[in-house]
Length: 636
Image (tube, rainbow, N blue to C red; front, side):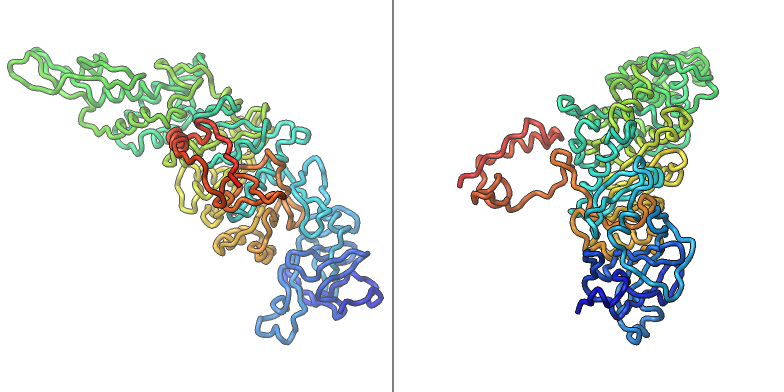
């Protein structure tokens, strides 16, 4: 039975504080408090909703908390004593404080006392709590679920610099939430020089941001405005380059390889201009160009060349002459640019022959790494790396463009968002590629952090879609290594990380725990919820029990970027700005005329079935190959 307004002078009162255990408070509901709706100033509020907010006046300030548990289990003391306390209890987790009508602030300076009144938070209270402190630094991403007239704001300073994670099961609205967040960032009226890099494994976001994003893809459709993805191999460290191009190399072959790398880099001319660095300061890790094709040719010659000893010269003298004078091996031919192998006279020791032919100085060393390098240089899927357009290297170490042009293309001011579409990259090298790009970007803004375009002057946000694919818990891949470094150090140098995953339990805890803000959509898997809960602050863990029942597009936002935890309905991006992640329709709905609104699905017979275009797109690794035919309207 609902009480009348006259039964209590303060209709917002719920009960009183009966137990305080750190930031957790047990509240006994008053006998007059109804179990359903509570009316305050003509507005209806539900009583005892997990995730709801309460206000505890304490002296000159109001303490605010979130309801984490309802019922007998929220009573103080051990569970076996709960029945004698009854079931009209709330457990509150304190999150902040504020004076009436003033700005809300996270954290509390004092605790409530036993007997303090506890009140439902009204809509006017919520406006105070959720009002952005400085509207220039906040963006609205949705609406508060319990009061849809109130916008849900995120603090961009903390969202970017303190890292964040967007998690949710497939179909929970995760991709739309990311598109909405980045769409807000790309608003040039608010952020005139934003810099965001998005790693898109499945090509979902290519058209989600319109002209506010540049899309990089292997085999780009330049007519549609896409840009060819080039990653210069010479911008990698020596370890990254060797691992990516040759696999494991050790011992004498590694020493020989490093000598050749160093020699090539010292003679390089990035952008056609000598680098101007003293030879002693150039290392194998210095990002200077060298010809990988000439490197392969030279190493192949050293491993496979043969040499002759005349009648008047022994092998030791011939070897010494080769080392001192650099005498070329006999009959060496080939073309490094065309990957034509040098050919040499075969080994022989025949008495009647005037010359004795013997193997070169390195002929007995293994050369499996050279065969691997050659196969990758011939692989058309790897040309984005070894023939990177303007950053391709001639035999003399000259390139058309330097790394400044590469960085301008990747994170320049002409567009706020760069989408790296990795759907055409071989699966075997995605980890190494993502790690290499991350390392290039991080090193650039780290060493240039005091410059105008450095990370401290213009922060960079890196968004990693499907993070569980290459940031596994036990992963030692280059992507995971680079992401761990950014998660631990990036805040100081202006590099923020946003992880997006449908399986947070498979993401490295070290990385996920560094995320100061968590935007959690519906999560049905228990291990995923446990992982997310473990990364949240202790006094908010009870809130995550609601994750399995969140609606599509609804999220629980906790952490640095919000004043207090928000259960928010994320705005859906407008038509034409949504990622390509909608579920395929099995049963096509009918229009007002009773006919199917389009063909497809399982509801209508197929007309003019033809798998040839499908095979063409498959072979070209391009879903738009041959154009896209308009679906045939089914016969009714």
